[in-house]
Image: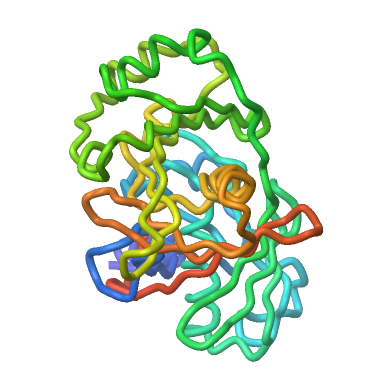
Length: 302
């Protein structure tokens, strides 16, 4: 009996419980936008465990929030460490999971600060609550124009024979941006069937880790989107990402110059779809604004 009690006690003591929230980001409707799993942690875990949890959650990103100052808590602290994992790897920048992380702290942890700052692999990222949404202060990643022939195979794998107007590469983020010709209707972009295996095998140089497809929008038609996009990252274990904040650090820079606008409204037209408000700033950064909705709260028991 004593041995059984000891084993039971050891099992209880060894059990780790991690809170987890799933939020849909860049939308105010459940099952739209981009889902992210968020784990606020009292203590750092091992990289291996972070990756295993991300595999288990099986979303494009799982984010882990940890305290920087041990005396802080999630209600009063204003600075936190933030890391993002896909099912296969850690990434340097993720917009929708940053948005969702801020929402967890503001909404579920009742954080009292007007602005939260996350220390990340992409530097400090500030998030401000504004009305029903959140404004993220992100780095801008201006892409460089490239010869389409350099990326002929990946373009062919993605868009087939549809006409391409522009090809740019953000070497900093390893995102290749392919703009469809203005003669293409939006339905061309939304109906593309992109094979992630063919896409990945068409580009193995390491220069590209994500593909952005984009086209000019219809600002005269309500709600007045300035441009559309889709995003694919099979190199990071994400066949298609529903709504991608980090891709808009590239898109925002490109379209701001092309359209002569600082403020833009963008729509990522994946099957789930999502809306992003953008403002390119003079300090070389970009504000990305969006909403979130919580669809799940639970506990990971290890």
